[in-house]
Amino acid sequence: MHNDHEWLKQFTHDPKFIRQLDECVAFGGNVLLAAKNLKIDNSFLNKKIKHLRDIASVKTIHHQFAASEAADNGYSVKGTSKLYDNEGKVKVQWVKTDRDKEVQAQALKDFVEGLCADLKIATPVPATKHKHHTPDLLSAVFVGDAHIGMYSYGIETKHSDFDSDIATKQLREAIDYLIEKAEPSETGLLVNLGDFIHTNASNNMTAGGTPQDVDTRLSKVMHIAAVTLRYMTDRMLSKFAKVVMVVAKGNHDTDTSIAIQMAMKFYYDKEPRVTVLETNGFYHYIEYGQWLLGIHHGDKQKPEQLAGSMARDMSEAWGRTSHRLWCVGHYHKEQVKTLAGVKYKVFAALPPPDAWHASKGYNGDGEMEMITFRKSGGIYSSHTFCIDQPKHQPDITI
Image (cartoon, rainbow, N blue to C red):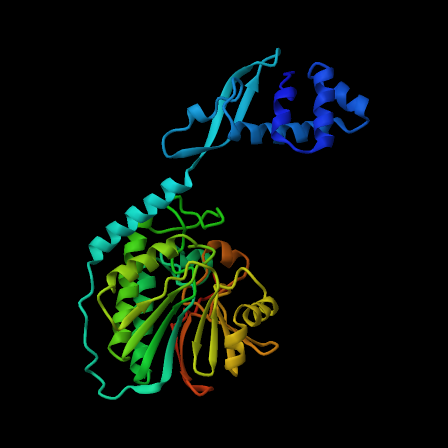
């Protein structure tokens, strides 16, 4: 046993726990005897003490917890694991580290600067193709969960193959089709509903730490994603007088989505016809005449909660508008609900399921939609691009 309980007291403000630690000190570090005397469960007290030691190992440098000395530059201490001998002395210590947030932020900034240097800056293009843009129409393209970087093997999933090349091919075909069908509206709105990129870091995990099937390295995925967004934006510039871009955070790309947003803002910095919104939160609102559009990935709140959030967050705009719509992704299949004063629409996604989602029976619609809104209220038109879904045959016919 080891007797560090007196030292541990500085890391808690709970008077009851401090008394329990005092009891451990009185019994020479014997938690079993202390717990018995306190008439509490021994395992419960041990768990509390272990948790406090983990906190202490991160917060300070101590002769038994010299953890911060073992953390390399750019890393912070996340926790420690130790092996004690029979006398309670530390024989071996493993230090678990995590990337320091400032270092992570700088790495992200460096990555974006490198990506932007490769993209260069767009040369402004005058809107000359259409002499007369309809001033009271807004054409919005909703990109739901593109998952660039995902790998899916069709034979395994019983759906289509999928990788980064297929993803960008589908997105280009979709935007070409939709722009061909679009009205020459005054304004085009490109809405990236999140999970445009399949992972959040080079460890091939989501923002929540879930491992993913990927087809290539993140740096290449980010480059493909940026070039694809640039292509989609340029196609919209060929039809509309101006373009506004919104990049929402997904549960897969919470941080990498910011990098893409920064890259697009840099690339179109000298193009007055393009506005890239700096949307660093999870909820975004656009007011257009009688329309109030809410944009969110769809993973943080239920539909009923989103309706209340819009009314609370945008109370003045709510009063000015008569048509309100929440635009979300995340679920890959179209859903439409009518709530109190708000419509809620899940926009479909183009990709097929990966192995895990296929094993659970999940699938997407394989669609991308454009809606043209009237400034006075109502919808002028809607167009949907659909990919050709493969017709799978039975494994065997007997």
